[in-house]
Amino acid sequence: MDMELGLYTFGDIHPDPVTGAPTSPAQRLRDVLERIRLAEEVGLDYVGIGEHHRPDYAISSPSTVIAAGLAQTSRITVGSAVTVLSTEDPVRVYQQFATMDLYSGGRVELLAGRGSFIESYPLFGASLDDYDELYDEKIGLLLALDEAERVTWSGRFRPPLEDALVLPRPSDKPGLGSRLRIAVATGGSPRSSVRAGALGLPVSYAIIGGRPASFASLVETYRLSFSHAVNPRPDGPFVSVAGMGFLADDGRAAREFFYPYWRESMARIAAERGFSQPNRIAFESQAARGGAYFVGQPEEVAERIVELHGVLRHDRQAFQMDLSGVPQRESLHAIELLGTQVAPLVREALGRASA
Image 1 (cartoon, rainbow, N blue to C red):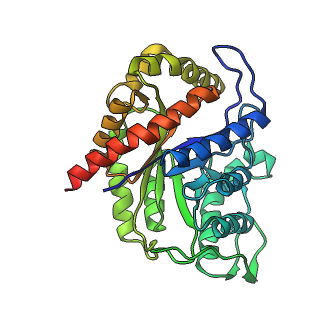
Image 2: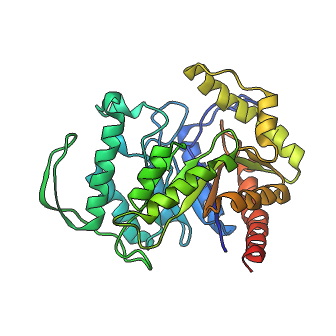
């Protein structure tokens, strides 16, 4: 079987932890578009664009960057990673993604999440006391919009809709019809796995630590819940895995290069959230076989992807390879290796296993 491979980015604009060189938001956005173009050129399947409302990331409006990426490509899927649906208007989000879906020929994907950072909540007037209720209501409205062009609906967090005509409608896709590609993002809670399955939607697991194989029970929970969904997506269950990774021609060189960028990003989050500071031992543990970080040379990363697929049977794996502003030259080389060397090895191995 084929498995999709790709990358995702938040548009990090931290000063380079090695050289101290700054990167402007404008330059980073141009860098991201270059990465999307290269990802398509080297045969990758997916690029995800994240959403943050902080000074250390360049992308606060993922749909704008996605639109630019789709306009410069012809084959690859470009989607959100994630859209913080809890602080958005589902009607406007639906219109934006349906528009992109039409002109790209169905290549856009909406990954709907609640967000691991909370800056968007006060920015858009949402209360953290309603954290779960906001998401539940808004994903429900988003799916209602996807089901029919006229919607009657009422809820707590936005004005009601009375036979509202919501246009445009998405393109017609094989196996899916005139619907958007909508998925649910989760950090790994059982409740989110059940919700995604019950809604009949694809699920994306952000695995940023620990042992990815331990997510097997969550994946099975999702698939079981999907099998009992009232209105499942006709193209069936779909499992994505997202996490940190980096590639270089030599495995040790990849880990040596990536470590200071990883440490800078993790140290900043640890300081904000009161976690213990990251260190080399923790990094090496997670970058070793069985860990959450896929950092190394192409053959070893491909082997680890295939090994994880044997446990999770997932359909897509995407890597965040530009933490803390990894320079563009190294970022592009990592993308090239992922597409030209890792992807063929993974597909060959999975093809043999399927046969």
